[in-house]
Image 1 (cartoon, rainbow, N blue to C red):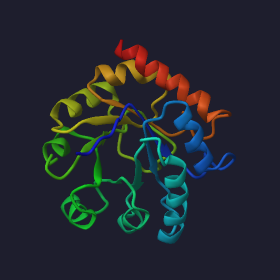
Image 2: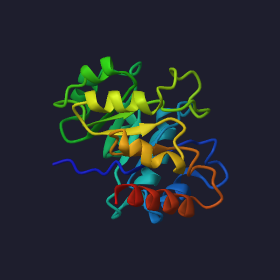
Image 3: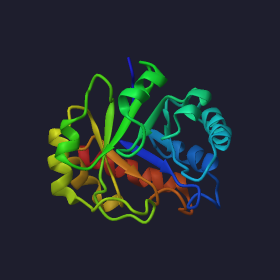
Image 4: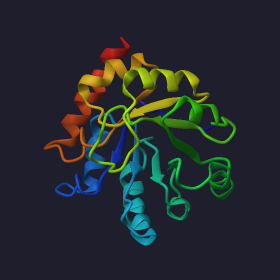
Length: 211
């Protein structure tokens, strides 16, 4: 059975993480309470993704925090990652599932009720819903959907969801209230002076919102 906790989902950004590094940022964020991590680097070659992914896997060993690889199926398989995440314009999820097998976690980005209605829970394990707010970390993203859009899409999704797109500490309660299982963050941890402290703050905010 696949086990994962969407509460605090870190999406790594190589530019924002440059000062600390993606691997060290991940190590510190796990100490602060991060529950999942996604390696996203659209400019990296598959070989580079595998190199970084293997280093991340070493850091995550024994923590129970799953490593998800964005878009690069070949790298995800080579790394032995826990999962892969694709967008609407990336690979077809049926083909992705065929390539990664039944045991890998498969995430899909969605941003509308229509896209939620097309999600097959026999293939997709969770969805990332957004962007909730405009975000500079993903240029050319679709229009922001806000909390009302998040609520509508989360209600239509047959699988658990995580809110993504400009999410900060102040947005935790509204994100969970809208039906998301957790929050996906980039700049709220990547590039912060202390990724550990940033993750602790967010983790505490999630616990408070659920209490």
